[in-house]
Image 1 (spheres, rainbow, N blue to C red):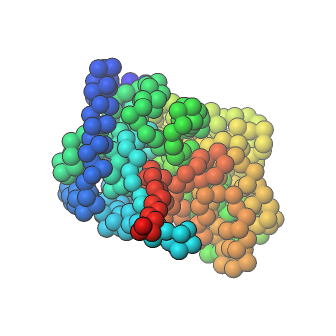
Image 2: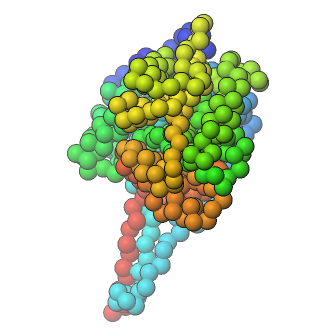
Image 3: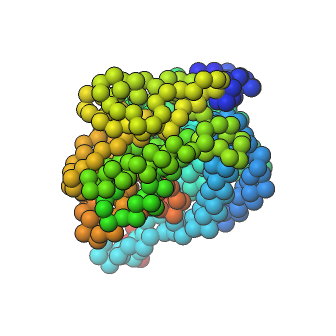
Amino acid sequence: MAIATTSPVTGEVLRRFDELTPEELEDKLARAAAAAASYRLTSIEERAGWLQHAAERLEKEIESVSRMITTEMGKTFRAAEEEVVKCVHGLRFYAAEGPAFLRDLDGDSGRVHAKQTFVTYQPIGVVLAVMPWNLPLWQAMRFAAPALMAGNVGLLKHASNVPQCALYLEELFRDAGFPDDVFQTLLISARRVEQVLRDPRVAAATLTGSEPAGRSVATIAGDEIKKVVLELGGSDPFIVMPSTNLDRATDVAVKARCLNNGQSCINGKRFFVHQDIGDAFIEMFVAKMGALVVGDPMDEGTDVGPLATESGRRDVESYVDDAVGKGATVLLGGQRPDGPGWFYPPTVLTGITPEMNMYHEEVFGPVAQVWTVPSLEEALREANGHPYGLGSNLWSEDEAERELFVRDVQSGMAFVNGNTTSYPEIPFGGVKRSGYGRELSDLGMREFMNAKTVWIGQDA
């Protein structure tokens, strides 16, 4: 894929970028390694101050940065603004809480026959981040903010269709006062990730992306014995029980499926509704999905913009066509509109069976699959039968149902009566083929730190 800004609204290439030459890539790797050697010695207070400066600058540039995001990947301007605001919050969170996360952890010296014992958290060096286009600032920020606070150095290999966002992040951290080369963007193709990850100057990697990409990075990292954190998408279940407020549940169900134009790993994608309220839910859900306005993402009245790439729309169409050809029922949408751009309408399908590709895979677009089920146990059986296990969602006012859901759902995150989302304050990540490791919170920061045990003996 060429490294370029291509409008999802028109399909027009707006700007092209040159890929790094081998010599330029080598220079960046050398500079990153040199920066890591000195940056690890900076004080926690200095790092927190630089993060605060980055937050202040980003906050002043919300409008222009939001327009850049919308231009490159097509989410609504309103959604882009929300993403940038979240980045500002993430920077401030790690600036404020990072010092506590980095504090030494005292041990029980007497039990290990020491004068003193503790665990100290130290940076591991250069970390490669391979990031996707769907949340072009926030995905990178939830790696960058904790990594830089921890004293690590970042190399960002961003998706090839959001190069302006990638370059902006390097500029943001440099202008905030971070030392030179502490955070660099690598404009390279995906085929060159292996070279970077195998380089001995790179200590670890984090990837958010497809399962094949994760498998490739995990294989390389395993061969090199390097730490890697993987977030590989999901097909999150959204379970609705009779005790819930149906109007509220359907409002959030529409948001859960169509947020970010339906292109988020934690979108609700598979809706399991108790049969006692199945007809009512479907009627309300289809009506609300059908009322969404599809159009220019810069327009204030638009709810759903185009998909980010032409190939992405082809993938969505392929899933829907396959399902319909094998007997699924289309209650809404299901056909691309005429005209330019990579638009696809909000779509609702029922009658999904294991013979259909979308039953087993992730549909990255505004396509909802709805089942009616006789019980919560059956909903969980269906939900857990999927190979992914990232987020999950239950709508219920019954305490026993909530406890059963939290205990038995196979996911890294379980949300009850609220939309699945990410916060810097709590861990983010999945199980099964959704990957391993955690981002955000103190756990995310410590993924790329050496928890060094220190034991000091009694004086002679």
